[in-house]
Image (tube, rainbow, N blue to C red):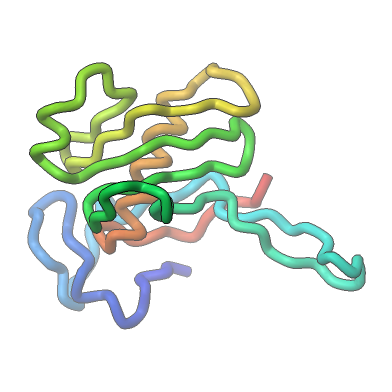
Length: 149
């Protein structure tokens, strides 16, 4: 089952053509299959289970400048990390020593802080982090994901 973010479908842009899809047939490059999106955890009262998100994309209320083109992406699974992201062209041109830059989506990750886990295959997780940002911004859709882990 595909989650095309009902109500925001007009914002989904084809990665291959860079044009809005507006209800057109999607090409496989327009979807990303996340390794995991959430995990089942017992609720506070232990009587039921809740879904805890494993990706959070947002802003810090303590940033001196808030912009729709900048923010943080947090991965709560393993490896647990936080990274700053930007889509702002001026900011991208100023950053030296970035961690990852997806030129197709024009999303750059920098100032990654690893709080738990290993740095093995970190670039694969950065790709997933960029896709979480792109999904949040309406640039890609999500294909049905595999089992959570």
